[in-house]
Image (cartoon, rainbow, N blue to C red; front, side, top):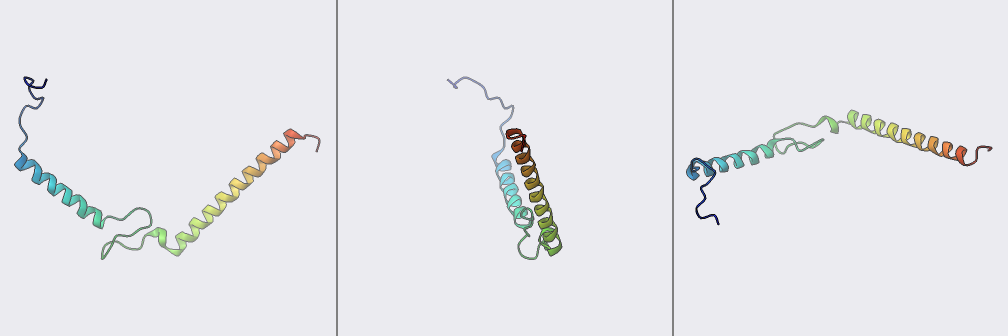
Length: 93
C-alpha cells in the first residue's frame, strides 16, 4: 500500500543533529523542573527559592478569614433559601 508513495517531507531530517538536540532539551527541562517553585505554597529544594508568601503566618490568617467569611455567606444563602421555601410551602405561618 505504501510502496510507491512519496513522503510528505521535502528533506530527510538529520538524526545526528535532531537526537542530541532533543536530549539537550530534555536535560534542560529536567534541570528547570528541579529549581522552579512547585506550585502554590511550595518551595524549591536546596539553596533555591525562599519561603513563599502563602506560608507566612499573616497570609495564613488572611486566607482563614476569607474562608470563614465565604462559609458564612454560603450558610446565610442556604438559610435564605430555606426561609423562602418554608414561606412557599406554608405562607400563613
